[in-house]
Length: 50
Image (cartoon, rainbow, N blue to C red; front, side, top):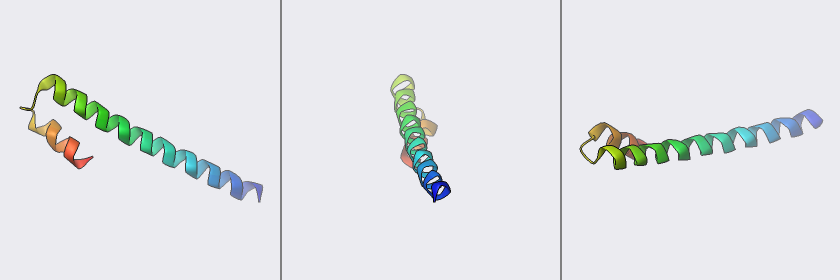
């Protein structure tokens, strides 16, 4: 039982970290687009993919 609870807790933590990483990637892409301008098509495509 204790192991099952630990697995559930770790899975929730992993999902939370994944969500955090995803949001930070989006934020970085937006800041890069802001810094380098709309002329950077690669950054725009990466933002759309996220």
